[in-house]
Length: 520
Image 1 (cartoon, helix red, strand yellow):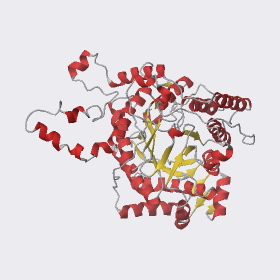
Image 2 (cartoon, helix red, strand yellow; image 1 turned 180 degrees about the vertical axis):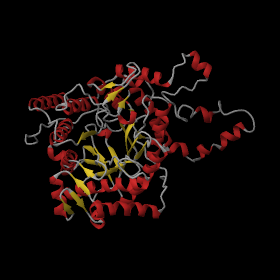
Image 3 (spheres, one colour; image 1 turned 90 degrees about the vertical axis):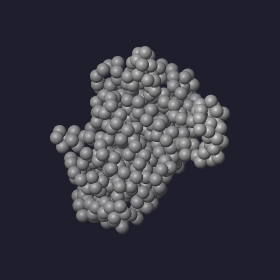
Image 4 (spheres, one colour; image 1 turned 60 degrees about the vertical axis):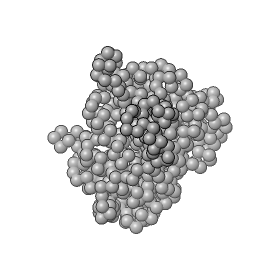
């Protein structure tokens, strides 16, 4: 599918925020400014604890092995020196450490709008939209329903609108009204035309991955060589815990690795179900499942950009249901952060909750998850806005409520808050007020009051009487109103007309060819 000569196009796509000139009047949001986490990470493990978990992960790979349900991957690893018995692959620790050392400690992803490029790794902290729920909920419906293309498009508009969302993850809700064989074509066309942020591809077999890479290349006005020269997009794969990697995800993983695109491997290890009930055991298993995929990528293309994801939480031992935002989830995220720094690899975590509607439980569990990401030194936060019911529901109200938290985290990271210059210590201002009076009217305050503190776009800081007089509107209701106003005023980012036409032609052609198989 990549044999045809590319059509060269002008690289366009307005400056960050310019796409929503009308929509910006809906709220006064913070500018595009991916935060840098200047805090020291929380490290619950002692050095001996780090070594113990590392040793556990290495012994899993050496003594138990991981099943690779993809013959090509097995052959590649066998030729590289791994011990193979059928689909079971074992590798010794020196081999693992040698190969993962070839992965870069950070890498940059560059979308069609060059102003939206992001760096993964170091102290960079990036937030992405909710990805992959099959269901949708909003206050107008009042119940969960299977996702549609219209709902997916609206959530993509929120993804573009909010500056605190830095990359466009998977489908923000699965549009099940589009047949699975062509769903990726329609959704990627929507993503590439409604947003100009970094794109994601699902690693679900050859056709889907190849189609998405080609569409991202077209949208960027790139030659094949230009696309392959640096990461323009990324994928995320999940292991099938315990200790398996499936065929289609490995297929996409290897294709993206060969072309130098961003790679994230995230084992789905729920302690007590698919991993040991102890968090250190679950983390060790998760790392083993991730590191062997990192090795595969490096064998295929040394220096391939790779990050380790963590999705280690626990289940409710009464019902078996997944739990998120728990103390155990927070600690597992922090522990994994220590090990990612040990391996010198970037890290991905998630903003997740088990709540069914955007209520108090939803916000405290999500807040726990997001602050665990901050504390762990996470670089990419998946599902940072819009996630409900353990990933089974996407909600626009929850999306907007979460963006209030994300903006607060961004402001928390602002070095201006902790500045200690002469004007910041403000001795002259303190002297002018002395032992009486107040600081409201002095020049020092007047010069700074508009930018001194975080200003919420959703929180209501009126007292009870003022809130009641204004209609007594609860937070999800305010978010629902904003949702409607944002969608109504939304303007898509600019795209060269010829590029849009080429994308549409590609989609039509691939649909006529049947798209992608739905069975593997």
